[in-house]
Image 1: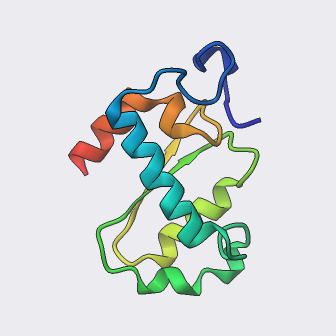
Image 2 (image 1 turned 90 degrees about the vertical axis):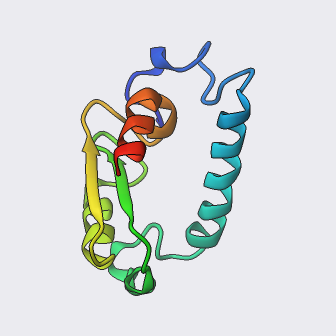
Length: 112
């Protein structure tokens, strides 16, 4: 459900079995952000995006086109709500884009 192509996961696992220190840091930072934003209805209901209008930092919204947990319309709504943000829709990618396309994601973030 979270991967577009489950063969890209490690042994069918969603997360690396032996993560690198960078992967651990990415996972922890992602969990913190998910806790800050995701435990409110704004994460799953694009109509409730008003808090995102307060974001002042440069923001790259990354969304998998085949995400079955959050439709691409959610990513588009967030991009519109965050002034000056950019939206990167990833083809052949599900919900766990940070693991599905990690080398590409790292490059996009560095260039952002």
